[in-house]
Image 1 (cartoon, each protein chain N blue to C red):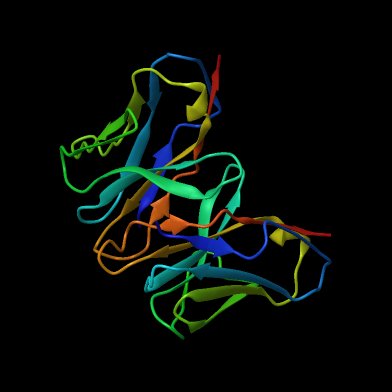
Image 2 (spheres, each protein chain N blue to C red):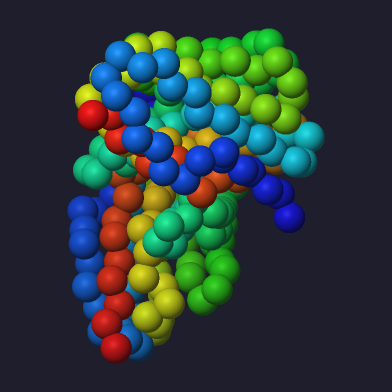
Length: 112
Length: 113
């Protein structure tokens, strides 16, 4: 079956530091890959997505590249801000099906 | 913007009570989902529905049921609440055209005492 593995948190960074959150996946077929973000007290919202190998998703300064050879979709940001403090979920969907498989989430805390 | 509204942000119930969690979406989405979110376990799918009156079990359906009488509304029912159902419950919806992009409500934090 499908599964998503992402690095455990929490991750604590100083403002303007570089961020990487690792995500690897196991899936049948050719999945679409996603990063969702959950700000404190809110539900999840889509941050970025990629639908095929070598695609790069980007939004709000965050980027992730779909690497089929390493089955990875690592999230990066060059300079984090305090407002980026949230929980980040890697996810996948395959086979055109409406179900999405989520990772366990990585909590990011950015300190001034 | 898509809006998914969960009727309560916080609920406190007693063991054995029947509990209803309500979710409404305003984008005419076909698919709706209920998840529970627990620390270290991420999101786990309880039930989903791809049409009115249709439902499918997710990964952890035991102890739960659902109802979808209208397209915009999806209810999660705890027939007899237990303490191990204390959790954050998230509702989500998705449409036909972008069916793997889900839109989430803010969540209901349920405590069963």
